[in-house]
Figure (spheres, rainbow, N blue to C red):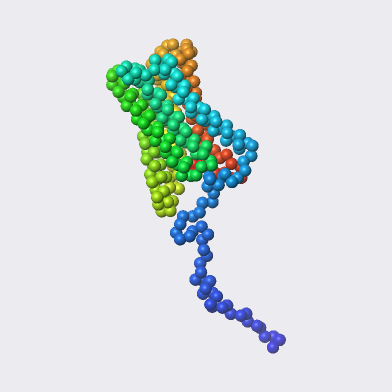
Length: 285
């Protein structure tokens, strides 16, 4: 009996069968629903910002808003004070509506639409989307009327169409703007009626829509700057090289637009949260 070897107890077959029949549950997948997001932009409101984050946020929002408003106001001032305002009966004065409407639509309204993802931190996601769409929708009449006006003005003054870099960039910008609006309206508003089924598609389209939105705004800035340069050379001629007052105003508009081309992409792609919690504003789309 002392030298006998005691064999271990055999494994219970019932326990093994029950273990094999019960696979581990996935914590992030219930009834076929999409995986739960780890963090969203809305959750950032629960975190405490430091002084530097608040300073950066206020600086970006205030400076962007002032530059967006200043771009339209200074353009209207330039047209009224130096270019004799608007008159639909005179082709040259009719053309003056073109820069005002294009800067107002492509720059100011579209810029505020993009900036909403930085400003509206306490609103619900759906409200921000609707405001974003509303501002872009308001810019559409400005862009369409501005294009029709310049087309009619060129026809009356026998100026050829689509020969300059400004017009080429304008066509590219308009094409991207139309695609962006249709994609955003369909993907992030219409498809919300079946949110779970379209979750993967919308999550895939987020970086595409966000990146091309910034690209479209940058192209709008480039188009406006080339248009201002073209107008200054045609209207002012050799006096433009003499640093006259109107030339300074035109250059100031161009500098404001360039500043917007820097600060708006920074505003929407820069995280303003503490260093241990990074999330881009465009993830809210």
